[in-house]
Amino acid sequence: MATQASALRLSIKQHPGGAQLLAESPGTLSTGALSLMERLLRTLLDAGLPAGHCAVAADTLLSHVTGFVLQEQNQPDEPPPVTAERYAELCERFPLLMGPSMPRLSQDEKFTRSLRLLCAGFATPA
Image (cartoon, rainbow, N blue to C red; front, side, top):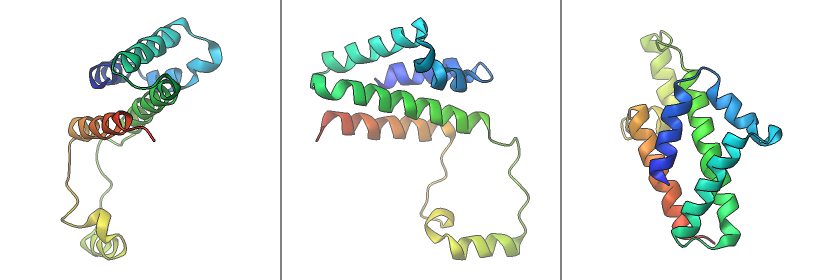
């Protein structure tokens, strides 16, 4: 699953609007999107996920990849300028998000970790 999701992320990142097209593809019955879903379903079934959970797991994974790439493609090239005063205010208001205990990860590392969390969840369906 992680390998397929990573390959999909790289593929749609190469095309401006690729994530948007993938998000819209179920409504158009795109054969490319259907083929992708079929592969994901097969992988999940082969991994032993109960058939009743496969469609939700595959849809969750595709939604995650699509959303992640949409966020990546919409990031500004440079973070907005922040004064020391504003930064202190943000740290006080959002201590968990802005604090030193929150790791600063690259997009690649964030994506890898998020896939691990999803796949672990798929392995223990409710």
